[in-house]
Image (spheres, rainbow, N blue to C red):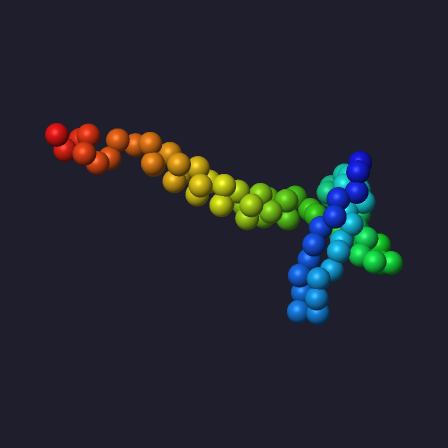
Length: 80
């Protein structure tokens, strides 16, 4: 897998995080990342994954709903 750069903004400044690997270990989704000289592993359990899906899917569904509603026949077509 090709490493991916992620930018994190903090009050101390901008930090670059390099995502090295993503894999499944037991019941966890594991992201292996590196920030400077520090390597870390982020463990996501099933509840965490559902939470991330909920957080990231909400804006997608709002855009989808808005797009769908824009195609509904409201307006002058029904007033005639």
